[in-house]
Image 1 (cartoon, helix red, strand yellow):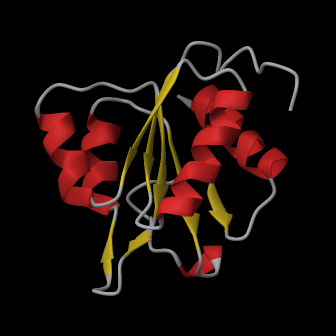
Image 2: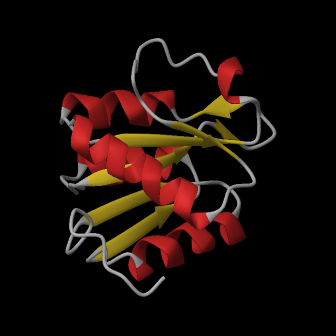
Length: 129
Protein backbone atom coordinates (compact mmCIF):
# COMPACT_ATOMS: atom_id res chain seq x y z
CA UNK A 1 0.00 0.00 0.00
CA UNK A 2 1.82 3.05 -1.15
CA UNK A 3 -1.00 5.56 -1.32
CA UNK A 4 -2.16 7.44 1.72
CA UNK A 5 -5.91 7.52 2.25
CA UNK A 6 -6.69 11.19 2.90
CA UNK A 7 -9.34 10.42 5.49
CA UNK A 8 -6.90 8.28 7.51
CA UNK A 9 -3.97 10.70 7.35
CA UNK A 10 -2.98 11.59 10.89
CA UNK A 11 -5.95 9.78 12.48
CA UNK A 12 -5.67 8.14 15.91
CA UNK A 13 -6.91 4.57 15.54
CA UNK A 14 -7.93 2.01 18.13
CA UNK A 15 -7.67 -1.73 17.48
CA UNK A 16 -9.29 -4.23 19.84
CA UNK A 17 -8.48 -7.86 19.04
CA UNK A 18 -7.56 -10.67 21.41
CA UNK A 19 -5.28 -12.27 18.81
CA UNK A 20 -1.94 -10.44 18.82
CA UNK A 21 -0.98 -11.26 15.23
CA UNK A 22 -4.32 -10.07 13.87
CA UNK A 23 -4.04 -6.83 15.85
CA UNK A 24 -0.51 -6.36 14.50
CA UNK A 25 -1.74 -6.98 10.94
CA UNK A 26 -4.50 -4.41 11.34
CA UNK A 27 -2.02 -1.95 12.84
CA UNK A 28 0.31 -2.34 9.85
CA UNK A 29 -2.56 -1.91 7.38
CA UNK A 30 -3.72 1.29 9.08
CA UNK A 31 -0.20 2.71 9.37
CA UNK A 32 0.49 1.96 5.70
CA UNK A 33 -2.73 3.83 4.89
CA UNK A 34 -1.46 6.91 6.72
CA UNK A 35 -2.87 6.59 10.24
CA UNK A 36 -1.08 8.90 12.63
CA UNK A 37 -1.14 6.42 15.50
CA UNK A 38 -2.58 2.99 16.18
CA UNK A 39 -3.16 1.76 19.72
CA UNK A 40 -3.90 -1.95 20.17
CA UNK A 41 -5.74 -3.58 23.06
CA UNK A 42 -6.22 -7.30 23.73
CA UNK A 43 -9.23 -7.12 26.07
CA UNK A 44 -12.34 -5.02 26.39
CA UNK A 45 -11.35 -4.21 29.98
CA UNK A 46 -7.98 -2.72 28.92
CA UNK A 47 -9.70 -0.71 26.25
CA UNK A 48 -12.44 0.59 28.56
CA UNK A 49 -9.83 1.59 31.15
CA UNK A 50 -7.99 3.66 28.54
CA UNK A 51 -11.21 5.29 27.34
CA UNK A 52 -12.28 6.09 30.90
CA UNK A 53 -8.83 7.66 31.46
CA UNK A 54 -9.59 10.05 28.63
CA UNK A 55 -7.87 8.49 25.63
CA UNK A 56 -9.63 9.54 22.44
CA UNK A 57 -9.61 8.01 18.99
CA UNK A 58 -10.75 9.08 15.54
CA UNK A 59 -11.84 5.58 14.54
CA UNK A 60 -11.89 2.02 15.88
CA UNK A 61 -11.66 -1.53 14.59
CA UNK A 62 -13.17 -3.98 17.06
CA UNK A 63 -13.08 -7.76 17.01
CA UNK A 64 -16.67 -8.69 17.79
CA UNK A 65 -15.95 -11.88 19.76
CA UNK A 66 -13.14 -11.76 22.28
CA UNK A 67 -11.50 -14.80 23.82
CA UNK A 68 -12.84 -18.25 24.52
CA UNK A 69 -15.14 -16.99 27.27
CA UNK A 70 -17.66 -15.77 24.75
CA UNK A 71 -17.22 -12.08 25.56
CA UNK A 72 -17.59 -9.41 22.92
CA UNK A 73 -16.64 -5.83 22.22
CA UNK A 74 -20.14 -4.31 22.42
CA UNK A 75 -19.38 -2.51 25.71
CA UNK A 76 -16.44 -0.78 24.04
CA UNK A 77 -18.52 -0.04 20.95
CA UNK A 78 -21.18 1.61 23.12
CA UNK A 79 -18.63 3.93 24.76
CA UNK A 80 -17.09 4.81 21.40
CA UNK A 81 -20.46 5.46 19.80
CA UNK A 82 -21.32 7.76 22.71
CA UNK A 83 -18.28 9.78 21.70
CA UNK A 84 -19.28 9.56 18.01
CA UNK A 85 -16.22 7.49 17.08
CA UNK A 86 -16.65 5.54 13.82
CA UNK A 87 -16.43 1.77 14.29
CA UNK A 88 -15.72 -1.25 12.10
CA UNK A 89 -16.40 -4.74 13.48
CA UNK A 90 -14.20 -7.65 12.37
CA UNK A 91 -15.28 -11.20 13.10
CA UNK A 92 -14.47 -14.83 12.57
CA UNK A 93 -18.21 -15.51 12.49
CA UNK A 94 -20.58 -14.90 9.62
CA UNK A 95 -21.27 -11.19 9.45
CA UNK A 96 -25.02 -11.72 9.40
CA UNK A 97 -24.80 -13.60 12.72
CA UNK A 98 -23.51 -10.54 14.53
CA UNK A 99 -26.09 -8.94 16.74
CA UNK A 100 -25.11 -5.34 16.24
CA UNK A 101 -28.65 -3.96 16.00
CA UNK A 102 -27.54 -1.30 18.45
CA UNK A 103 -25.04 -0.18 15.81
CA UNK A 104 -26.98 -0.04 12.52
CA UNK A 105 -24.90 0.76 9.49
CA UNK A 106 -21.65 -0.24 11.21
CA UNK A 107 -19.48 -2.12 8.71
CA UNK A 108 -18.82 -5.78 9.60
CA UNK A 109 -15.88 -7.56 7.95
CA UNK A 110 -15.42 -11.33 8.11
CA UNK A 111 -12.00 -12.83 8.85
CA UNK A 112 -9.89 -13.56 6.93
CA UNK A 113 -9.99 -10.34 4.95
CA UNK A 114 -7.74 -8.55 2.51
CA UNK A 115 -6.36 -5.10 3.37
CA UNK A 116 -8.40 -3.29 0.65
CA UNK A 117 -11.65 -4.70 2.06
CA UNK A 118 -10.74 -3.56 5.58
CA UNK A 119 -9.72 -0.10 4.39
CA UNK A 120 -12.93 0.22 2.37
CA UNK A 121 -14.91 -0.53 5.54
CA UNK A 122 -12.86 2.05 7.45
CA UNK A 123 -13.58 4.65 4.78
CA UNK A 124 -17.31 3.86 4.88
CA UNK A 125 -17.36 4.20 8.67
CA UNK A 126 -15.51 7.53 8.54
CA UNK A 127 -17.83 8.90 5.85
CA UNK A 128 -20.91 7.85 7.82
CA UNK A 129 -19.79 9.64 11.00
